[in-house]
Length: 200
Image (cartoon, rainbow, N blue to C red; front, side, top):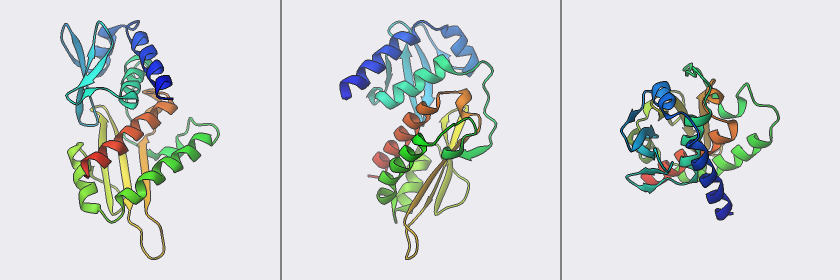
């Protein structure tokens, strides 16, 4: 499966090179030079090579979730896309038809609820390192910039005698103007993994 992911990432890298890079720079106000475009994704700056399409950060070559999200936003986002600032639960984006991905999402979140349980201070600190600011309801709740122009919101409740731990993620209601719905899962998976790393 890993080879399939790498193949898809390489295909998107080649696809990126077909698009107008000047338009990308103008649309999102990106910093650029003769070699790279620069874009910040969950608090980390990435360089996208203008000749090869490779995506890197100070942490090394971008993984599948990082690269695919960045490629999708740069190449596929709708003209004039702009965040509304209105946050909706990931499972209820108005443009979604059907529920198969929602069930996948529940499973995805469940993997992290136990990781975060009763670790509010570490979770809040990790979110802050990613640029998160307190907002919303929960034992830990914050708004985190996915990109400088697009936020997500995390709300987390610890388990207690009556209820299990609960993690909810919210996105801008215009999120799918920026990326495909499937790509939102790549982005949120990366966010949760980064939080997990920062909590160690």
